[in-house]
Length: 431
Image (cartoon, helix red, strand yellow):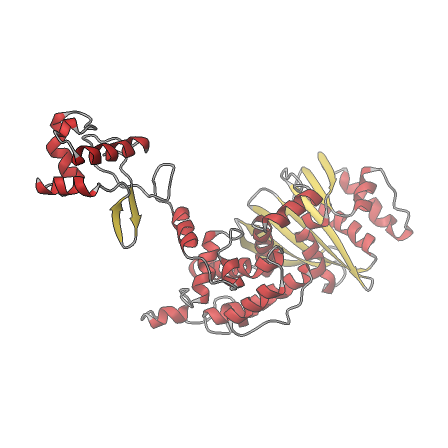
């Protein structure tokens, strides 16, 4: 049978088209116990054996056989002399087995207990299956951290590879690790939520988190994306010796949470904000921040999809408009020093972008120096374009500008990211 379906389900494999009881008894009388044996014995009667006449049977046997074969024909299954094949019954297209389909069948067959919001969120369609499985294993304390490996007889350092100040365990990584707490602090600042529900127990922490936000909110899924990013950073440090900065982790978490945000939120954002800027490399983003007249500047340069630079620069005493202008100047200056001939610039300050395009002016006297220096830099590029974007599409530069508020004027730090991993990190003085 070339397309006879089997149900490959635990605990056993069975035919999806089983033989009628009467016909099974008839074949067993001939010491034939499988369809394959029947095929081998009777294949000489006809290339395709559909009818009861081919088997010289009548009466109840004929009725049973005709019903059976008609069912096969309706399902486009033909009996022939080829070998039987196994197909995955949950794949209605070609019968092949894939990890995605196995995950889906598990989720569909084992729905979480009623009222358990945490498990419902973990196994929801708003998370990639690999993250759902990881979170589930972490809650069961089955993730292969050093403390679990040592229970199996493995010998290793047993210390956290991120903070080097605690045991490499699930509870430490996702509850008390300094890197984890730093990530949560930055996320709370960016998404404006309180961290009053922290706990030393992962399950308790996640349960408190999930009841604090609507399931349609991006914030509701943030800890799951954060746990996955922390786990990958931990593995990169252990197996490849590559350390990842908190800013890079934040970038990954924000990108992942926006990519897999709830459909309602995604549709709402799409209607309100559009699809975001179309990136043509090389490109740069800038932003400025000011608190109590102390400014900070953030900007980033993307040479291509896998190579980027992130900068944080102290701006000293200034207004928010001045911080934005200094951010544009610093972005152009850095690109010119790096020898980038063309650049597509994105910013969320309509005042600065419109001034650069010539459709608006900047009349504030204390900005004249920065205006002149910025105009000079614009002449250093073969091609330069400026585009206004929404604040929601400028999250990385915004986060960098806020982190720069504590830096001295003209002093900054930069991070080079290549293939999602830290390539270099240093400080500099720009003015």
